[in-house]
Length: 361
Image 1 (cartoon, one colour):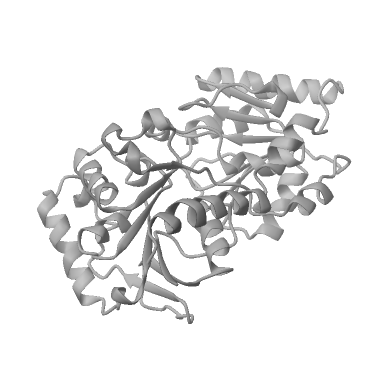
Image 2: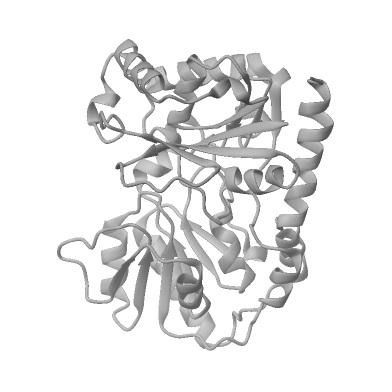
């Protein structure tokens, strides 16, 4: 069986659900990856990885937010036709949420849709046109494997709904082995990710905690008037960022209000798992289904002022040995259930017992 996975980012060893899905399916089937899109033509093709090139710069053009839908559709059609690719060779095509869903307008294959984000987050806008395009792919798909909870899914397509949430791309043994509660902590607070962040909050936090280095790990540019203790590292690989996180006293997720508005269906994500593994308290701006979870050391705030107060209180409790960096049994069980092995078992059931079994060739 031959499968094509169309995703909106390049493949990497991450916690992204489409990558875990790719790894699982590649163990048993012939899997190719189509990346939708690449920013430039300096691409080294691998034997099973291909790229769309965004020559018309549609992705980086603000006109996509108010350009008439039919023009956007036409531009994608031009890209589809100009990219000489043999889609017919595949038995199934798995399409990730985001811009790849436009391809479903033209594809004739059996489609499986991976809804990894609601449209508000995938397109960074509430524009109804993108929901219309998403409904089209759900209508055409055999099944939609969704991260959304059932009550947030389109009611008219519940017969095609399968819930599956991404895990932690690490093995059960590695989770147990790498748990080290005796790592010497430094005056470090860390954020890692790629979501829009609240720069105002970070500046206030840096001003209030001048004795702490606050690391912002991800593709963020250092802002003008940033404080000396705000460290924008740019992109770091796993071996680089894990050392910083291990030494941190707190992990923060200071999402911007824009993200908060678009993430009303979101909850606990894989971004939390690494600090949880090392017993590091997590302070996050409240969004969607996310609430305080003291067992997992997750604390949420609504206003920036209260967020800074929470962080200061946690640091004081750490100093007084009222909070340590151990991981309780229930949190460990939770993490083990997010392991690569656990997620592979879930995917085994989804693909072989539901999708492929119900669509025997």
